[in-house]
View 1 (cartoon, one colour):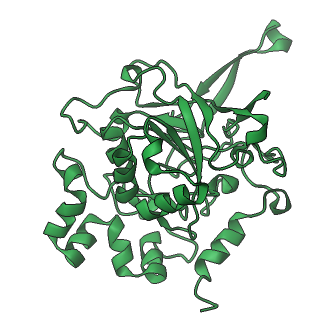
View 2: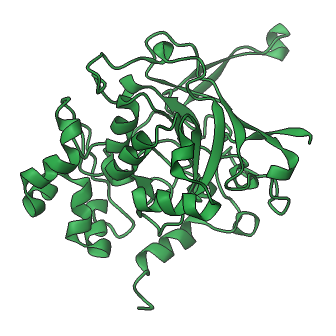
Length: 338
């Protein structure tokens, strides 16, 4: 069977969508054809822009074995590369992906989670189709948390590549009420996204993302039962817990997986290729992610992904089956038919 290489990377440009407080990439010409007969360009941007890798040092000082968290150059050269599988995640808009969703995805493709040991797990939530400078992609993404992180550790996966804005649900990040840079961003209704979530899903559901709310509702002992492993190594439990569970146990991550991810049939075993820069003391790196697959592992009904404007996202719903507006309408009108 002939091998094919499938691009799983969003295009990079100065206009690429980026995390809410990241700097805009600056691209300039040192030389131009007209002036000097050669083209030489320079780029200045945050390395966590577009499709990229995270190293442990990005989110923590110490890993669970007590050693200083490793930088990019300290990870094995093949840390982000290896045999891989796509798990199809079925979840409502803005939903928190748990161990139950991951078990259900494995059951759907007929795979025992124990067989994921040493593999790269690619999550297809559908969020990559909404990649854009939008609230739909950043504020309201579905995403993982502590339970998913522990699931990846339990099943000894090698790397997790997610098709969304981060390795964690948005409310587990500084977009919500976590971290020194907490933004508690305003949502589509004009209220903070933390308040919107409470109104849609309830106060108890929101507490999963907020250390102090969790303790208020469930008590400190219950909090420590769930998040204590993180707190014991000096990190804030509800602040990017999936990042820390994974990276603290040596499981690296890729964020903003995209490109032609939908072409790969869920459950097929293929080779995932991803190499960050060999950056001394780096906290992560932009990377090119590629799948090496057999032709019969591809869904022939899925067209090649088009990025119609500025190197960004969906552009035309008729081409990609969804839009950020439709996604938010499903989110905010989820109870209308009940």
